[in-house]
Image (cartoon, rainbow, N blue to C red; front, side, top):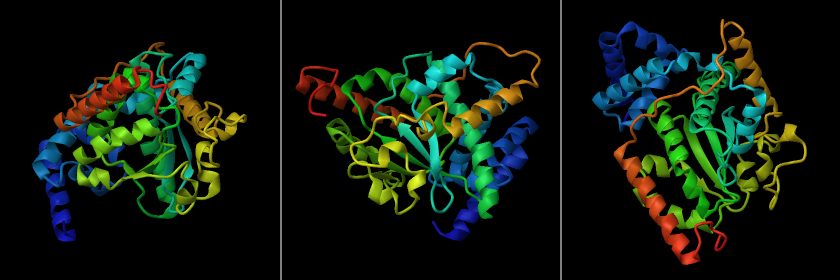
Length: 328
C-alpha cells in the first residue's frame, strides 16, 4: 500500500473515532497512543489489512475492553504479597534485557521453561498486561524522547530451551495471553527471534508457518543455536538475554541481577516499585487477582491452536509419551 493510501486510511479511521466514539473511549485511547495517535491507528489498520471499517470495530472493541476491565488503572494494582509475585516471575519468564542499536526495547521470553503453575490464570494475565502497559506508558515514551522519534514497537527473543510436549497443558493460558495481545495490543512486536529451538518446535513450526499471514511470517526469524552472532548485528552484547550470551548456556545466571526474568533484575524492580508507589494513592489495596475478561479468539488463530495441539498429540504418540522426553 502506498503512502498516500496509508495516510487516507489513517484519516478515515481518525475521523470515525472522533465522530462516533464516546468521550470515555477517547480518554482511554490517550493511554494507548501516548501522544502519537497516527502510529496507534496504523497498528490497528495493519492488523486488519488496512480495512478501515474492520480496524474501527477492532479499535472500539479494544477501547471498550479497556474500560470494562479498568485497564487504565491496572498499574495501581500490585500483585501481593511480594512472595506471590516472585513465584509468578519464576514461572512466567519474561523481562526487558535491553535495547537494540536503534533504541527498540528487547524483551526476552522463556517459552520452554515457563510453567505457569504457581498462581491462577488471572494472576498471570494480570502480570502480563501490567508489563504491556508499563512498556507502552513508560518504556516506549522514554526511548521515544531519548531518540527524538516515535518508537512504538519492541523486539521479542523467544527461548525454546526445555520445550516439551507437556507444554500442551499450558495451551489454555498461552492462548488467553496471546488473544489479549492480538486484539488489544496489535502490531506491538516488530520482530520475533526464536533461539535454542529443539526438535519439537521445528516440527510444529513446519505445519504452523503456512497458516500464518505473510505479514506475521516475515516477522519470525528462527536463529541457529542461541542466535548470539545474528543478534549482535542489531544490539550490543549487554542487551543480549543471558540465554543468548554464549552457546549451551540457557540456564539462569547465578547473579539474578543479570537474569532479566528475575524479580531482582532492574526492570522488574522498577516495574514493581512503580506499581507499589501508585497503589499508595489508593484508599484500599485489594488482595487477590484482577479478573480480566479474555476476548473471543479470532477464528484463524483458533485454527492455528488446533493445528499445534494436533501436532503435539502426533509427536506424543510417536514418542509414546506426552511428556516429550524424546526427540527434542
